Image (tube, rainbow, N blue to C red; front, side, top):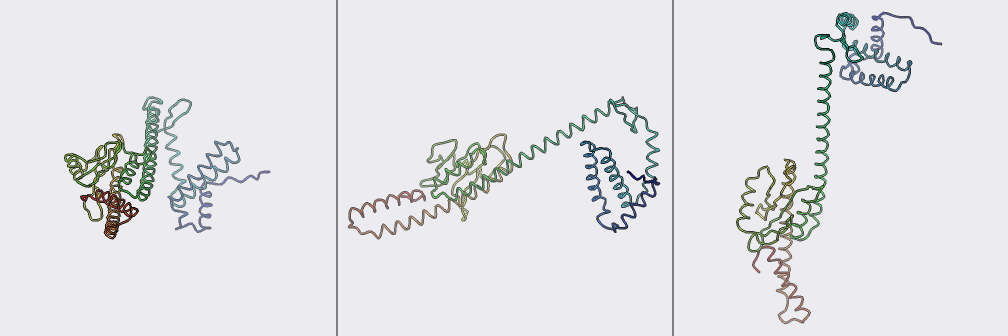
Length: 330
């Protein structure tokens, strides 16, 4: 059996909420901060919405309405505003407003019948829906771009690990080009690695595939000029430098026409810097190996057995390869 609670005036309702705040010492705490209370309003409104949309029944609906009213009164107490006076003043104001029939609903607004029924409201609604559609589309595109960037950064990191596992200059250039042109990775349209070797510059690796070998003087001059004036566009040229800051070669990259973005250029620059350090590192390894082989060759006796002569020929052949790779005359 439900106990009837006697009706009380508005002022007593406000006084009851004030007593609740005083009991728990809300004054001067975050509990009366209006920004915090806005979050509470959203929470309670959500519970009210659930009671309606899920059809939880009159008792639950009444309880949620009461929760929202208590919270509204609490916010009025927190802000120290005369809610009762504002309530009657607003009620008197809206009672004077004209009504407008919009479909099967009635809208009571300040404009009333000053505009054709339904026209302004429908137009505003269409405008708001279009704005929301654009916001959702922009958010989706932004999320896609962020995902793609994360994937490319992941691919770039994996590429650096792979480069560190290569032990020859030719292999290093081929691996770099492959990483740059892998779909789903950094995903460039094309790439080429040029290195300074015996007798001049050489194209070591490229994709789409171009013949490896010596590079004409005019092409090398084009690469040198491009590194001094990098501009937005499809073709990007980066110098390969070591710790000593001397030119070791160039990395040329071609971007897709619809994918020329500043972040991609920002990613390629450190990639080229790391590639230059790797080229220098492998060149030093070659120099160390060359010195060791030359010392070994000097230590070999002039009169040697057939087996020792075969080893000597292998050492000499390896020295020729290393000297050529290091740009020295055989």
